[in-house]
Length: 239
Image (tube, rainbow, N blue to C red; front, side, top):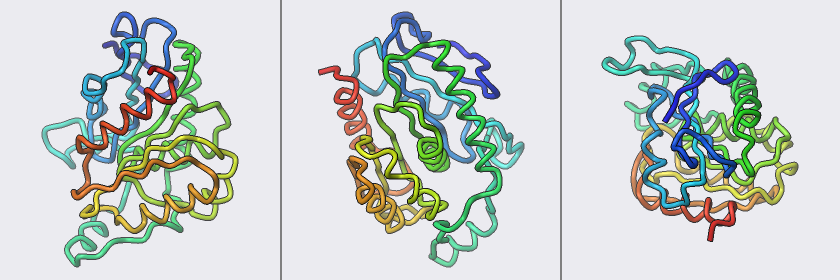
């Protein structure tokens, strides 16, 4: 694995013929969630049974959270109202973010798009899948809906619906895009019913959604990784 500054973001790159992104195979780009370090999703590349030609890239979010999560390099794509989240959790309720366009989302989108430009120029992937977990999932979908580059697939793990009017209007342009969406029925942070609402909007717009509900919380369980393996083998024609 190697680390490089591509566009404005630090990116860890692995897989490929030399385990440093070598070769000309397809590329999977995964964005981590709020409060996680840039390395958070890196171990997943070893958990997926796909040919070695597949390359993986893991950008680190640009915002440092300092001591918010002691003991690790906690990062964020944009800031969230942690106190409001904690109040909602304490009350056993969820916040409806579907009408929100978080402050910092457009800037994060622009940074990821610039990094994707640099990644694809350096690696020249035959095909591209982007996705992420939680805040990274929301950002990956937002990028897919605002950027017109060809995508082989989209991964949306434990995210939620944001900017509904904007996203809904842009979704038909991605008609036919394979999407892996997963969400825990017991997620204490982002409500399951909003994931269902997002799924329904994508299906209505013609995206091909593999929706994987599971009995769990805010996480990526084994069954979801099994579906990721199936998605990559299908969209990359790996057999």
